[in-house]
Image 1 (cartoon, each protein chain N blue to C red):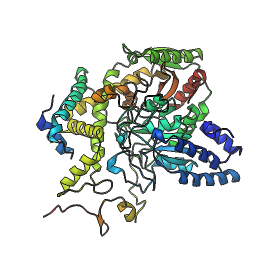
Image 2 (tube, chains in turn orange, green):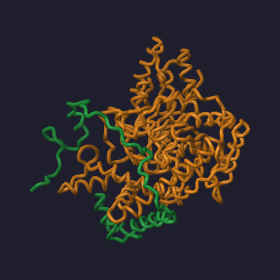
Image 3 (cartoon, rainbow over the protein chains, first blue to last red):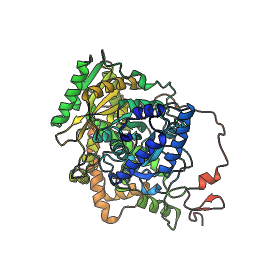
Image 4 (tube, chains in turn purple, green):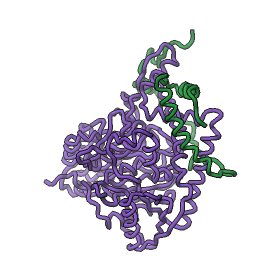
Length: 484
Length: 95
């Protein structure tokens, strides 16, 4: 039999329906890949027995004709989603022994659709990072690496690497400033951050609540559309969940881009933008044009301020969200003579360097005397960034940009390590979208001279993921990217 | 606005974190680099611009105040580092 892990999620579902192979066989094939690729450090916890148990139920359901939307599909879950009875750590020492007594809404929806979970995937500690190097479990190795081990991107680095190396049929990710899209770009896979409010945040370990969104990461556009349809929907357990109907995102695939207006923002082509990335961008625009779309130049004038805004707002929200880790009710505890010592000792030992840095920044910008100068100022500029997009979407239906200004870089890269701002700058093309709450997808757009994947980003209007999927499908068909 | 050693100590205290005195100046420098970088926001004219705290500008959705579960004491306590008689325990707070 051919290797079942080479099939896309959609092809695997077809094969299962036609009884060409069983869910147990499919699951075993992925478990073998998961075990063979342990050196990538993509999984921080493997749960093959649970996956096989679900696969057996799935096979019965196929026999009975009661199979559901994702029946028997083995997925990988970012270790930021609470999974009932399965250790969930956010890749932080401070909760490295936490076993949730409840299931996140998104993972519950996936289970209800018949999917199984092969295990929990590595990420930057509390999703704070762009290279997966801040994880308590160590960095993930990009499966595209040759001699030098390269980063998989972050924060959903484990998810991206696992999908690229076929260690799961698809994975969940979360995206606060680019954490689905950038690793997807680095690993040559597809991922979408939906509109803020589309997927419930209930049961996802919180980083920056006004920016966090869950989304799928998969082998292609169709797989992502299929997964997002299952993952989305109103949830009364999340007060910011959007109470609106979820379309079947797969239905729009193949409708093409004829008549669509595609905006190209001038500010995303700074002097010195990597030539190969620039070329891939032009090529993608050309493809859309040849397929009947119209290319329109647009301007997002506040783009250069998005990162400074993000690095005030996200740490501010994080410092508040992470106040709960005090060593009292769950997680690590480092004893102290007095209660306050217990808090301080626990937090000092439990959080890593980058997380502490962000808690400190967040605490400072929210403190009396500095609140107006930093936090309030950032919130005002955030509105201007959102307004830039609103203006642009009067002239176009979608915005096309590169996902990242760089390709995957070596683990431990000196420039990135010596100054945190250098690492922050990698998110320059992705953060604005989170600040504005918009949906955006990254798909592979070709290879660099170093034979590393380059990603292209499509940004849509709020709650218009369908137009993104249409154009992404056209790009995917014409680019013909080959994975590993 | 650059911070000094004392401010770094105070922020750490507010955040319930301890910084080794030996690491203080390194932390301060890193902190000041980030502050100097975010201060480019001062170039932007934000007069008459309302702050945006969430893209959800409508009021948060309220749900009826109903009991939906209960009797979960074990589940609630199962991850606690220390418990006694069905309670979380901490060092003595009141003398």
